[in-house]
Figure 1 (cartoon, rainbow over the protein chains, first blue to last red):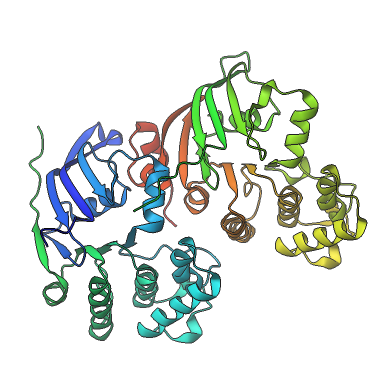
Figure 2 (figure 1 turned 30 degrees about the vertical axis):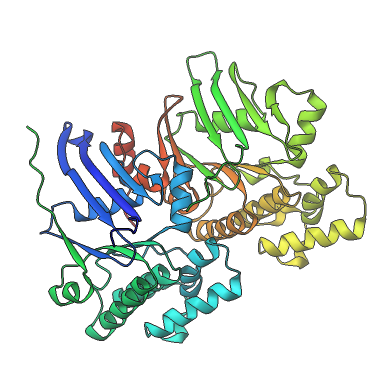
Length: 231
Length: 262
């Protein structure tokens, strides 16, 4: 492990929000977060609601801008990179499974799942074959594949979301409660996907409140505590 | 690991200004746009976003600053410092402009096929059969029945007219497409279809686009990056999800918080 280079390296990551519509109310959410994540790791962010776990994932993905510190992903500092450098990371390096699927009007479940693979240059047929394979494993009924997921149940939408996340062999994956809306059988399938990706070298940072699932997937915990609020 | 995106920008805008003479207009606009990027420009009415688009499209002449464009031939030209003939040729071949009101971008007395074919003829195509075949192909891609090819756009619905305007712009393979509220005047259900069509075309053709919209949902769906304008200036910019999920400026926070989550 010591000779391997981290795919993700955080140093001193600090973030606050200023809510201008509430008289400039300041909320400190991250203070001096350090973390190294190596290929094959699955680091689960540990702490109660409100300690900044989702904020940290969003900072790594580049959705939240940070006040200070560095977020090195495969040689790019997300904290300071230009938008197009972050877009390039999102195409090639960082996969993100959000808590909820963002539904796009008129786009089928199969196309939603295949999109990241196509974004990486796979041709349509190959991308759709991988997408179909994942949807089959996640037991989404085949008659739903050609439909836009807007009318799917929460669990069905989340399985589409997870399939979309795993359709590419990402060097780094961010998982925000990937199994929260799934039953035990489907959660076990997702745990299997996580194992397989890790075996292929994918590093993961995850939020997972369910104790059994967390024990199943975590190789390490990152303890997080609420940031002292500046006066 | 990630190859540095090192190619040159397609568009470089430096300190761009336009003054309508009443204190309104745009000032101090700087940005660069790379091939394949979709840049959304958001802000309320009067923020200067359409003025910016008209400066980029050549309908207005800037009172300050410059717009550098890298042509297909690799030459970097100042769009407002070109001989008129060359500027028009570029506008017909490399640029597309999709107006909010399709009637501003179509020739209403000319058939649908003629509207699409005209841009090809302007770029030198002369073979009638090939022009008609290209027009048929493009009508299909924007989901207009080929049986309507000889009808004039006045007989089309608003959504069809907008799709025809898009076909007319894209048939000649433009490298930079400017869009002014392309879904603005349409019913919600028609909007969804047009958005989906635009999303697919942008992805499949790798188009470089500047799209002006006041609809943050449209911006989220189509744009990689956003610029927020207020009072003629860019007050915030970044990745689309950065600007919408972590807005910094008081005005952007107001804009984002004013949208009903659907």
